[in-house]
Amino acid sequence: MMRIIITIILSLLCNTAHAGPSLNFSNIISGPSSGNSDGIGSGAIITVWGNDLGTEQGTSKIYVGGIEAVVYHWTIADGSLPACPSNLYTYHKMIEITFAVPSGVPSGETTISATVNGVTSNTLPFTVRNGNIYFIKSTGDDTTGDGSWGNPWLTLQAALSGDGRVSAGDIVYSVGVGSTSGINVGATGRLVGTAANPISLIAYPGTRVTLSGSGYPGFVIYNYNANDDSLAQEYINFSGITITCFEDASNNSATGIRAIKGMRVIGVEITGPTAYSGYNGAIGGNRQAAGGGKYLGVYIHNYGRDNGIPYAGNSGTSPPYSSETEKNTWDIYQHLYYLSNRFSAVNLPYEIAWNVLVDNPIWQGIHVYDEANTGGWSGPLEIHHNVVKNQRGGAIEIELPDSLTSPPQVNIYNNLIISSIGDVYNNRAFRIRVTTPIVHIYNNTVVGWNEGMQFWTNNTTFSNNILYDYKGVVFAGDEPDIHTNNLFFSTQGTAQPTWAPTETGNVTGDPLFTDLSTEDFSLRNSSPAINTGATFVDVNTDLIGRERPQGSAYDIGSFESVITNRAHCILTGQTPCLTNGATYATVH
Image 1 (cartoon, helix red, strand yellow):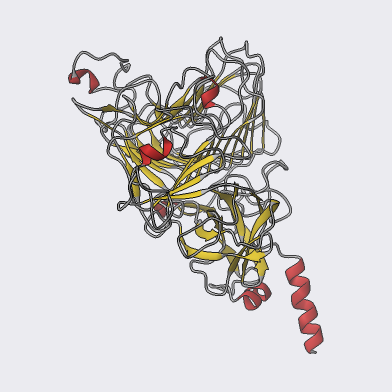
Image 2 (cartoon, one colour):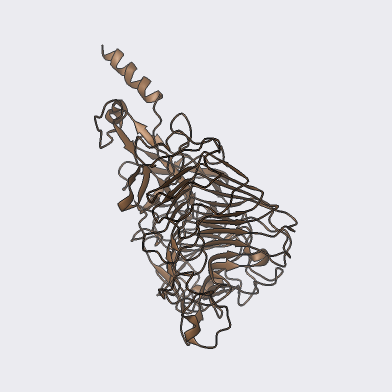
């Protein structure tokens, strides 16, 4: 009898997809296995973010190259210490693990993995290589310090000036030391890392590193000589820091980061309630300096003057400004992300992913815009797993010219876009104005907007998206080139777009979000969005890291539903284990 029961349980488990531990990204992807003088770890200190990893370490472990690593912290990634300042828990439900590369890991390419309750996660790539590890402390000295834990440096500016104290492959950890005068990267001499050997500035585990002021007029972190591709800095990483942009009569620091070629900006917080004018944004740049960046887990909130004027309250103004009264409107050139490739040859593509962009009155969110005199990008632009809430203007706007030397493919998937009932700033969830580039918009969930989507293009595919209207605003003003398997629903009786009912796989009815009032947009068991999506193999996870598909087909929207049965509940100790017939719980 026992053998029969065990056989039945194993059979149920084999036929029931469920979530396991998953790793999404890391702050650095290479570093040494030695040289760490803090007395805790041997090599580079790494942070990874993932899902279903447990809210504390317990018996779980993290490995580099199969060797267990020393853990500094294993915690909810909610932006509070000891975690990095980026809140990746409210919507993404991520866990953050910080650890050091063990001394026994051989040089070369290897992997990072975690084991939780006996289940091993996916792997992230990591390369063990040469490089120095330095520290900055409030007790340090830029003249007599050697950058060791016992004899550290004092300032961030000295570390990144380009005077020869750091070089390609080096990592600098700031132990709670920030700056009120920004950082001018490369001010003394050109600072150049490489893709294999970048230079990194990282907040030491459990400390806060805050930056404000101007590294160069208008920028908190500035890329010196950014407009000269032969002199600009390259491959400089930033992780775990907080940037506050501000603008007043004496300080025009209205831009967070001036982009650096090949940079990684990971787990960083950017805010600036008084920021207003400029031609960049929280993260902005042009030419080759704006190519190849990875902007992962960035938390940008309350960036821009909240003057209470709806986006349509006036036409906006542009710099220069003659008085403060002109700033009681919105700046048409200041955006949240503004990465351009104007006046430059074909550039490296970039990735904007797992960001949380909330309550930003600055005009335009993820703004991919260029003019005729640009070479384009050498690979796809990736915009995925982001949350954009209450963004003035468009949440995601793609506007590219016809005459690109190398038209990119733009992939937009697993994003959650929200415009609250009281949001007066939002314009459109998507505004696509391209001809030669190809745009893929898959598996996004959009809740609320103040103007319908725009598709001024012949090369956009729009599939597996949930559009939930509760403001009585039209869904779209025109039609994407290809569209399948979308779900349109309105609590206000707004009609589907005229083109929607005839599309392949069109789904109707309430998507049955778990709890609209708490912004839990995962799907209830009986949602019509479950198992009714088209298959896109390049969209292989959902917003919170679960593999797609979990059932017979992809779910529509940014969340994939995981149905478990009682056998799985018993073996894993999952709670709650509800007894409502054959289905016992949906994991969110």
